[in-house]
Image (cartoon, rainbow, N blue to C red; front, side, top):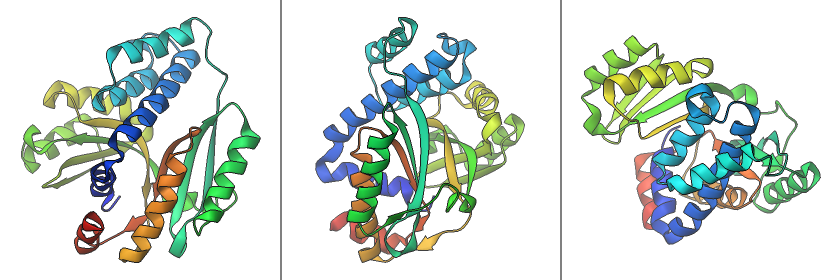
Length: 249
């Protein structure tokens, strides 16, 4: 998504890092416990768990926390969460997908709806914006992993669909069902990735100015602060100029 990695950096710079990290670890723990409950507790035999552990490690989640989350599932602890996807529009008609894990569907729906309403958006029906996105696997490597040609060749060999290389790093996309296979092949060739996960990739985007970005950030921050919300995806597009103004704001 255009500008999204820069946006994450801006959020971190604004002094929210510790708060975000604690939230992030709690979200990762939930994902790891669910994945271990649904399949084998051994990450090598459970692709979903392997990806969840890998993503947690990439964000420096301590090994103890990861092992504790797996043990919770093995011991039959941990609430029974269900996964729900909400779709809606943010300020200026930006499409928003909210992925949640909850043990209380009514509470989560009510919180998500009121967060949209309070921040200039509105919650729609399932499918209301989903058609603007494609479910894809996303693997991110740092610039140091190699030049654009090296990464492109490795990605093609591994069965990926597309690569976007920039000064920020390399983003490799593949079919959602191929993520485990492609990431394993890339790891053998390029080493550990920075991030490996399933994403919603926008097919169409909405261009935002500085005011629009600030309004959208307010909504996304509020949604991400909800303990039931795992991930928020939007289809914003913003120029480098707008992103740098946002950094300074």
